[in-house]
Structures are given as structure tokens and as C-alpha cells.
Image (tube, rainbow, N blue to C red; front, top):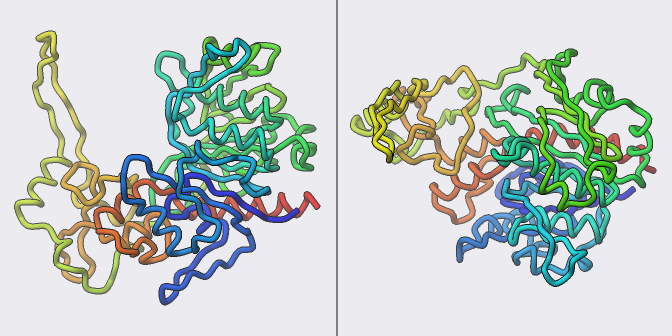
Length: 414
């Protein structure tokens, strides 16, 4: 089976960097893996400038890169591929009956999951790897688990089984405490599907599945739950959208509509301290904090109990716990947000290696926190935008580890 990939919502190329163990030497990209990326799409509707796409093209070329709204793309013209990858937004996935066609089903307009679903219907790639925030498993608040249930049913209707795991990169020897859910789907036509269809779901989670070898877990099930998303329980996606709710835990399997989900805990003692990514060379003075700015950070990151009043006149206390200030260099970085570098509670501030003064992270350090090559986003963007890109990106080291397992799975397909 050819190792071909289509990358959706490509950003600055995190999936490609991970699967192909990419390096950047003298501004030249070296792809050490043998995954062939046959098409990528990156479109940011909220801005005129397309800096993420420009970065992707600068690094990988524009031959197979698309910069148009994915809903405008003719899905039939997307090249055939073995693996579909993408980090898609967590949105409201509710569906409804179309007015013009009583048998038709439509999703909320602009929700990017439905673009993925269209590709599954038309191209039916053997394997799919997606990334999202972990709250996907519990949204929306009024109908817990509905959105992920819709996604699982969509996969089922298109002929797939699914495994998922919430992975905190910082718990597996990577530089950032970033928790994301990874969703791996495999079509019923694959040898992998046929092999795992003979296994019980608990064994897939704890022994045989795609995630457990690279991301070991304690051999103990802390909680579990079962449900059914098939036509035996729900007629169609509208039925799922209106009625389905359940407790999804941080790992699970869906096979033939039967869902098994389990709460698991990491079993890895490897820590990547923040001090390992700190630049040792001299850093530009613009990153250093004035005494006044440092005082602001100390306040923002400090313990607080502030009296406030609700709109109805009721008084209450707004509280926040203290955070390390500056950040602890002996532990992984906290989750990096798109606001990194601004004067906010969530921005990292560190002791400089050479001067011992307190400063912000540099864009290179932000790239290292996500395991990108140094200067990956140094393509004409401002420092603020480079930080924004890393706040949006996935941890490349996670994809490297997943790629090891995907290699083994693909080998057995031939």
C-alpha cells in the first residue's frame, strides 16, 4: 500500500513535520520519512493575509497545496490517498433535516467536520488521523457526548471503526503539557480492521491498539462505559443529534456501532524540562521584561480573591490560584495559547540562561515547545504571529510517535 497523505487544515505543516521527521538546515527542508503528501489545504477565512499557508508553501512548495475554502473544493478532484490527517476545530456539530428534501441531512453551516465527512464519503481513505481539543468528548454542556457521538456515527456510516486517546504530550517525554484527543479511524476494507474486529475493545485499548505502544498506560481500568451508536439505537444522524448523550472517557473504541470507553492513566516517567529548550545564546533585548512589566506578571499569576457583583446584584468572590512566576524550568512548558507573548496570566516568562534576567519566550523557543525545527515560522511573520501559529499547532513529537505505529500498520496491508 502506498504511503500517501492528504493534509486538511494544514496550518504550518505539523502533521507533515511529524510523519516525515522533518529537519530545517540552512533554510532547506529535509524530509527523512517516506510519506508522500499528495495534497494539502489551508484556508483562514477570518483574515486577508494567509500567513500559515504562506509558511507551508515556503517550506514544502506550492505544487500540491490549496488555499481555498475547503467547502469550495470539489472533493472528487482530491487525489486518492492512504491517510487523511487534520486538526479540525471543536464546533457545534448538530444536524437537522433539510427543508427541501425530507430525506436529506445537513450539518451546521461552516462546521468543518462536514467537509471531512464529505471526503470520507467520496474518497474513502483506508486510514484517518485527526486531532482536536479534549472537550470535544464532553460537548455540548446540555447534551454531553453528543458532538463526538455524531462524529462516531459519521465514521460508522462511511464504513469505519475508530480508536481514540486523549494524550498529554508532557506526560510522554515531550516539552509541553498539551492535552489533545487523537482520533484514528480505519476502513472495513483494511487488514487492520479485519484483525481488530476479532479483538475485544478492552484489549484494543490496553494491549493491541494503535496508541498503547507509543503512549503506555497503567494496566488498570479506572472507569468505563458502553453505548451504541448504530442503527439499532438511532435511525440516522438527526436521531443521534437529537437524542444521543453518554459519558466518553479519555480512551475508547467504536466498532460496528458499539462503543467502549475507558478512563486510563499514563504510565511514563520521562520528563522534558523547559530548561532544555531555552536558548543559550544571547537573546534580543526586546524579549526582556521591565520591572513594571514583571510586576504585572506577578500580579496576574498570583493568588487572587476579588469581590465582584453578578448582574442580578448578588455578590461573590472571583478566585484564581497562584502560578509559578517565572515558569518552572524543571518541568515541561504549560499549554501554549495563541496569546503567547502578551501580558497575560497564560504567557510564559522564564529566567534567561545567560543574564539570569526575566524575559518572554522567543519564537524559536515556542517552536521547540511544539517540537518544530528552529526558525520554522521565520518566513516573514512578526514575532506575535509566529507565537500565534505555535499556539494553534499540535505537538509534532506526538505525530512522530504515532507515525512509528502507522508504518507498522501500513506494512501489514500489503
